[in-house]
Image 1 (cartoon, one colour):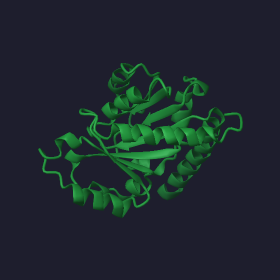
Image 2 (cartoon, helix red, strand yellow):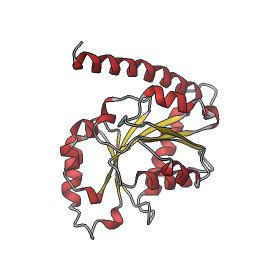
Image 3 (cartoon, rainbow, N blue to C red):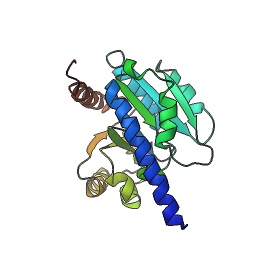
Image 4 (cartoon, one colour):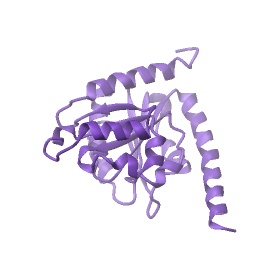
Length: 224
């Protein structure tokens, strides 16, 4: 059996698990986001501030994927949200089966929103459906304007691109026009939000977007 055959089988198994997981999320009407970024881009802080702005109107839970340690999970529990840690060991991405096991520890019917913090990596997670409604790629201004061009599959699959740490833009010589042009080139259909978890800039617009997405999710339920 070739390496290609093995990869195809793994992805097929993941697709089947993701379809089953999506059915569970549909049943609970939970809006599910798969948040992906490079290490150090501010993903955990962005999630924490998102949870704080959504509560109490939208009850939010978090699944955190990391190669090792539960540092991010402990930080996120400070927001008051229920958090489940997934330690992947040597696996550089979350898979649907991992998320399914973690989701069993949450009351999905009691959650309006579920945020999945994927392993910090812009390569492997692009191939793995987690049953999410929204795939969100977070890009820090400190990473350089050409990141979307270097990792096209990840950005091409994005429903939303979050530009983070914009309070540092001037200090790191961030070229906003070039960055947005590269995002649009790779992600023409994605919504783009420019944010700072430190100052709060852009987070109100992000919150309003999620409220609309959640309402659309609930409208699928004839009893809502």
